[in-house]
Amino acid sequence: MSVTTSEQLFKPLDAITFENTISHQCGVTMNDSVEARCIAEVMEKKPGIRVTYLPAMIRIDGEGRIEFKMDEISEALGREMTPHLFEISTSTHYGRMVMVDDNTVVLFGNMDDALAYE
Image (cartoon, rainbow, N blue to C red; front, side, top):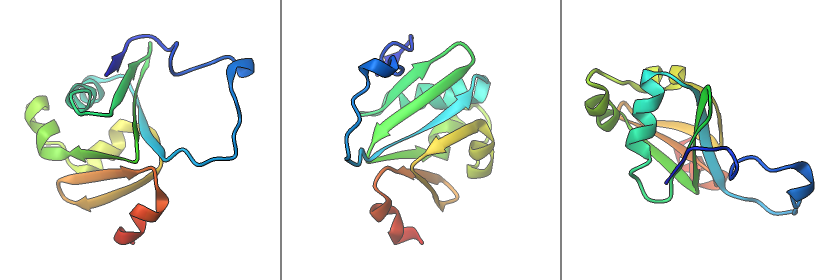
């Protein structure tokens, strides 16, 4: 699901309800670039992923886990994307980021799920 405005992502403080719960959400924020747009275009086709385009940034958010496949991104980009180049493309992330292998970077919203890769 692609979101072109920030209205669903950012809320005024008085509209936020604080709860003592764990969300299991995860995501990345990237500076808008050729690589970031390509990553976003690949990821917005996946179920359960929300991509938000902001004036200078792109956010990719999901629930539980987000799996980034470098071969899928490379094919769409037209050149090689490695896990290391992927990390350079991301400004920040939330959740536990794990490089599973040379082709897969996974963000875990549930920290217990990431323990299998420690």
